[in-house]
Amino acid sequence: DQQVKQNSPSLSVQEGRISILNCDYTNSMFDYFLWYKKYPAEGPTFLISISSIKDKNEDGRFTVFLNKSAKHLSLHIVPSQPGDSAVYFCAAPENYGQNFVFGPGTRLSVLP
Amino acid sequence: EAGVAQSPRYKIIEKRQSVAFWCNPISGHATLYWYQQILGQGPKLLIQFQNNGVVDDSQLPKDRFSAERLKGVDSTLKIQPAKLEDSAVYLCASSLDPGGSYEQFFGPGTRLTVL
Image 1 (cartoon, rainbow over the protein chains, first blue to last red):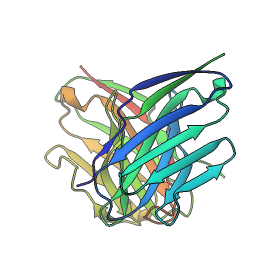
Image 2 (image 1 turned 60 degrees about the horizontal axis):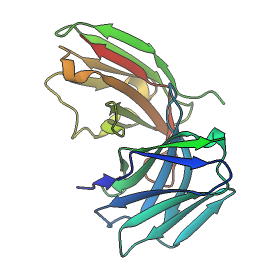
Image 3 (image 1 turned 180 degrees about the vertical axis):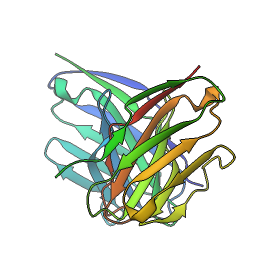
């Protein structure tokens, strides 16, 4: 079974600085990972993904890094903005890649 | 395009009562998911449909939870009878197809409180 851990329940960062959110997973049979962002009273929205053929994927201010040997992902946000304040979930594949297991989330607060 | 619709947004019931949630996925999306999100945790998959067939319901507590997706479009999730530990946000999501290459779009969720 896939297990996903996000060991930092919360993170506070000053506006303009880098935010780094970490994620660890246990089952590397299918290497395709997702990050979702969630605002209060809304459903999660897809942010960025990465597959095992890459070790980095960049989309604007958001970059995800994959370390397959360590079974570790990180999401970098540079520069951080107050609108980035949200809960961020990492998700790893399960059931032969048919669905995903979500981590417990990291609450990011970007302070002006 | 319209997003995933869910109703109701909030529901308060007493334990042992029944409750039902409704989801209308994005038009054309074959795959529909129901998740349970308990406070402080990530969404946990309850059931996954591909059109009107069940792909995965291994984590659905079948003694009290049931779900259906008639005609491969709308879906309902029912809890009968509810327990205190069922208090959570119930999220519906849809995607064009299963698998990681197809983004899941989430609805706003239904917040259930069981007293």
